[in-house]
Amino acid sequence: MIIDCDANATYSPDERIRGVISSCLEDLGNPSSLHRSGQRARAAIEEGRASVKSLIGAGDKDTVVFTSGATEANNTAIAAVADRTGPILSASTEHPCVLQPLKRLAARGRAVTFLSPNSDGMITPEALSAALTPDTSLVSIMAANNETGVINPIAAIAERVREFAPQSLIHTDAAQLLGKGHVSMKALGVDLLTVSAHKIGALSGTGALCIRDGVEIDPLLLGGPQESKLRGGTENVLGIAVFGAVSAMIMAQLAERCEIMKGARDLFEESIARAIPGAVVNGAHAPRLPNTSSVYIPGVRADDLIVAMDLERILISSGAACTSGKPEPSHVLKAMGQDEERTRSTVRVSFRADLPLDTVPGIVIALTNAVERMRQVVKKG
Ligand code: PLP
Image 1 (cartoon, rainbow, N blue to C red):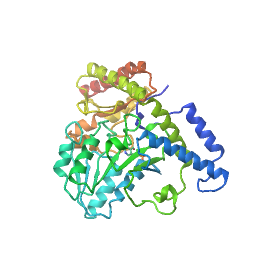
Image 2: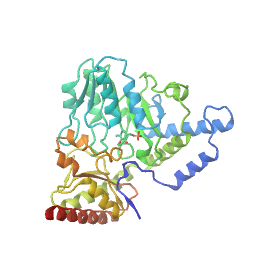
Image 3: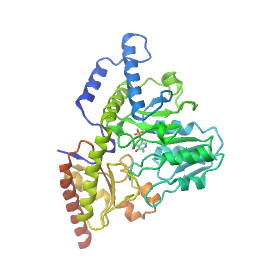
């Protein structure tokens, strides 16, 4: 059996979800068609929209626009202010799909500031206030970080923005918080909120941007009237239907799922603190997602540890799964002030809600043994 501890983005094969997939596949009409097959597809999309809306705590009049994922949703949010002139505030710990479009705007002359986090990886409202100006046009800060699981105080940040730059748009990338914590568009006080289906166990290739009632943005993708004219292109009916079904399942069990993940995560962290000398949890003093552990293990290379754990059939990652494979050290850990040695010796272990608690001791033993073997090799070398 493979134990998946690289679970910040994994499809969970559940009977109910398989049911949704097979019924969609039986009759996958074009939702823009007027005939019955098209109307069934339309109904599946609207059902999906209602479920996603309710999981993200959106108001009745807020608009959920389905996209191809969080990358597209984040790019859409940023493109919404491309024609404005005011400065933009974001953070150096953001996902590359926020960093890169912002860097492109900066290269074209726009004032863009990337705030540094505190040593625990959190963007504080104080750091934001120091950089806010009355003409700020966009503040984009992620709700939770994909590498460390550190949660940013988005509601407090949004309050400061409303006070000091009332005309600014506020965007949050909530791709990691969804399904692992309470997400509420209303309570967070944001204008734009990004989510991704595969981060909650639905299919990759689907996401959404939620737009607060009264906020007007231009579509990024032109070419069709779909999604209230805010995203051209035939909708991914299957992806949206599964996103909706998983959202409804999670909605009913959110607190219980978080407790399970936190139980496994806490047991893991307590155990490695005893078993692996020098192991340190990154962001340990900040609020964190219940399932994510980013651990610095001195004296080992994260890449070697991933391979050693894979041989034990336990999947872990270094930094972000979506960027692992690239040789550069994590930009998130660097932004937290960590040196290159520490960034190269950090692994991410993330726990699924369906992982039995009694598998955690085995994971700890496998990790401890691998670390001891590697440290012996380094000593002898
Ligand atoms: N934002 C965050 C915080 C992520 O973790 C990811 C994951 O890769 C993305 C955005 C991109 O999501 P997607 O793969 O849906 O485009």
